[in-house]
Length: 74
Image (cartoon, rainbow, N blue to C red):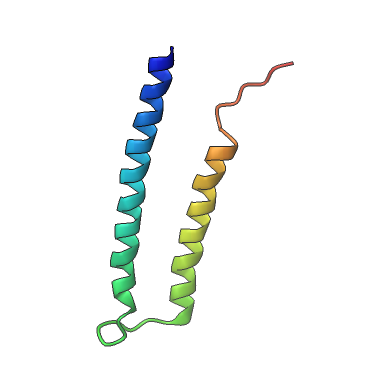
């Protein structure tokens, strides 16, 4: 059993690091759109983008604290 738990921990760490770095890369790419010399955008558009990103971050974070597959028990 201890080996299985260790494997789960290693898998989590490996995937979480990879996926977090992928998200961070995509955010950096998105920030390239801030170049006013190359793009024209409104504050409303920026707020819409970041509101959606923040909503999805909250949704993902919630899954770590309140797992969806919780079964009812008495």
